[in-house]
Length: 413
Image (cartoon, rainbow, N blue to C red):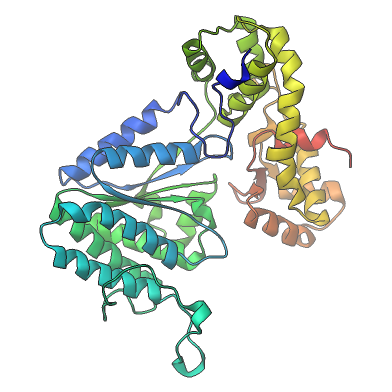
């Protein structure tokens, strides 16, 4: 069939042509927006799940919902080597700029921007004896007003973020709307930044202020938040984003195809679900390859079998291989042991391996490698920092990437 008309989009964070199976999450966020609009108390939101389940796509869709209600919004992607100060300042700057044209008192906007500028510039490191930072270390956030003094500029990120969020929420209250900040890869925030973010959200929830944070991250993100502040378990509304069920996966494939007047045979859909495991990224990858190989409509199971090797080869390079290459030899040895152990798990009700969520005891990994558990801690810790594995429960680890164990078992040692 015509590859130009291929409707599938297996890209990182790229919205699929049919956002199937996420209606509940969209409805929940709509309720959150409406409650905040009516001055009702509401919690910030945290989305968790493995890589490839569509967290970034969902995060962007939720942001579109907020924008549709005329909220101010900003989005950042957390990085382990970057402080929260600069990106959060840029995101809030964008959010308030969206609200500014509707504000009746421009001086109030200027006042907040002065606080925002002071908050942002406080991140610049000073030299010995408090000397000004070198020119290369200075950062100007593109705000024309002078920096304020005495507000959100103490240098303590927890104090400053609480004050900044409180002032931003006040601006939103003036306009009769809200502000939503979206944070992707939230588990990569530093410990101090996570603590500050929790404290700021806690203060906002007590005040009933119209500013919410919507974070997305790997399955161990709730544990990261809990380690920072014990009350974070009650502070956020947690939603686990999982693979699509059979009905939603079929919809993700069939709805865009029908718009191109193309159909699937039932056996083709059976095989596509078995191959993809219902994971949205894989659904798009197998759907795209199958479309390109199918000669005509309806698409058959034979078409899927012919296309599957191409889809798997692309995933092996772009989705699995690129991550595996980031690991050191010691880390690869650790992951191979994990893959071997997770491969002993049972079969799913669909009749295919579903080892991507299986947690493996770290003691078993050490035993299989003939090593002491303590000697493997450095490899385990760096793999967690690189986002390749996570520890959902004490003493266990699992892959953050669906099918990664299966991929490793097919690779030569």
